[in-house]
Length: 171
Image (tube, rainbow, N blue to C red; front, side, top):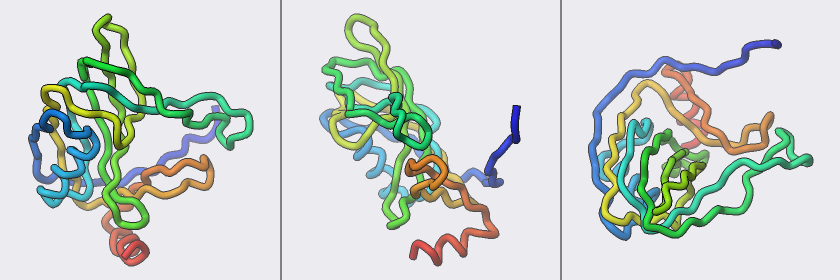
């Protein structure tokens, strides 16, 4: 079975933010604005429901030349109306200190065909509403950077003892 390898950090929960993203607003851009207006840097998207006019996301596809044997293909674009069944994700910062979101969602079209994947900024306009609950995480920094082992930009958690070290590195 091999070694069990993990990285984990103890964090505390902070404020809980409940928001609504209004029609024609891009999904990711709306989440980023909610985070900015509420001074939230690190958190998790607990739940999201609503509808989209169209969707744009990526999924892992086989690639024999990639380190992990996969890559993210070209964006998949689905025309709506789309029922946004659920979404969850992680909020952190990139190495250049910009807010970053890792968001996975499931939705269905008018024929109840299901879709899911890694949603990307741009191309996900809200139809009627997206209701979102975000929980702040304290005592941890989630920094998205290129992971040498996988060759993907991934979030790495840094605990309280290493938070100052990470802040110095990215400040």
